[in-house]
Length: 176
Image 1 (spheres, rainbow, N blue to C red):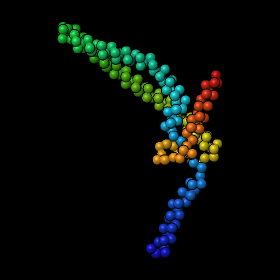
Image 2 (cartoon, helix red, strand yellow):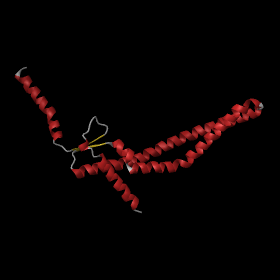
Image 3 (tube, rainbow, N blue to C red):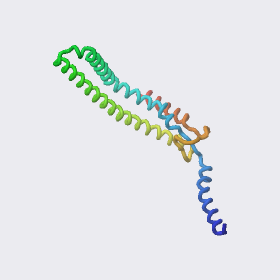
Image 4 (tube, helix red, strand yellow):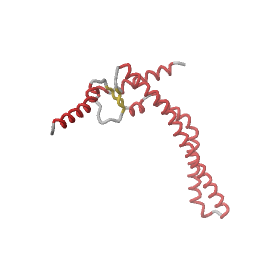
C-alpha cells in the first residue's frame, strides 16, 4: 500500500470513528416504548373509555348474532317440514339479519379502530413529551426507543418515565 493510499485510508477511518467518539462521550438513554404503551395509565384509561363507549353496541351485536344463530338452528331442523312460502320467508329473514349483523360488525370494527387510533395518538403524544422532558431534565443527549438489539439496563429510563406518567395521570385525576 502506497503512502497516499495509507493516508487516505487513515483519514477515512478517522471520519468513521469521529462520530463514534462523540457518541461515546454523550449521555444516552433507552426507552421501551411498547412497555410504556402497555402500562401507561393514560393508555389504560383510554382503553377503558373505549370499552364503556362501545359496550352497549357490542352487547346489541352479540344479541343479534345469538338470534341469528338460533334462527339458523331452527331453520336447519324445521326447514324441510315448512311449506315453501314459510320457508322462503324465514330464509329471507335469516339472510337480512345476517347482512345486518355483518354490516353492524364492520361498522363497529371501523369505528372502534378509528377511536382507538385517536386515543393512542393522544396518549402517544403525552408519552413522547414525557420522555423528552425527562431526557432534558437528566441532561441526556440521545434517547433511543425500542426496538433495539441491546441496551444496557443502566441506561434504560423506561421505569422512571412510566413512574412520571403515573404521577401526571394521578395529578390530573385528583384535579376536579
